[in-house]
Length: 117
Image (cartoon, rainbow, N blue to C red; front, side, top):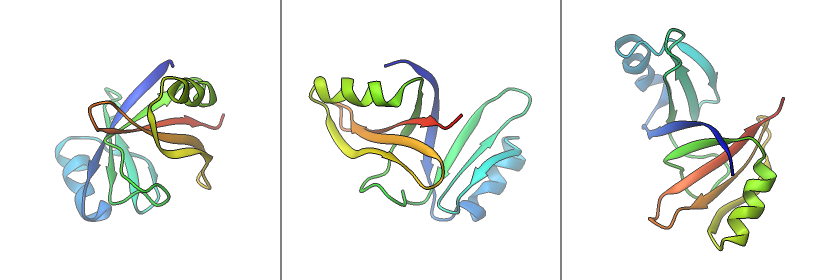
């Protein structure tokens, strides 16, 4: 598994209601995407970012972080070989990512994701 970026996923009751704090006060003004239930905001100056999440639309649990992988298929095979609990199977989602959710031994759920090129 090789991670290229890790993004915090913060639970919020309403993405649009919460985004003002993150965009105005924290300066994460670039909205990379907004699916209504999840949105990523980034600072164009520093690259710092955060994802706001109400509830994952296809997975049974919400992930605390999203780990961007070089090869999500290989990461999935490795997680299974190591005996980790797969919370959401390897899936190509309708919004254009390939991902799976895995439970870390400490109980945290991690979204392992690869964006289409």
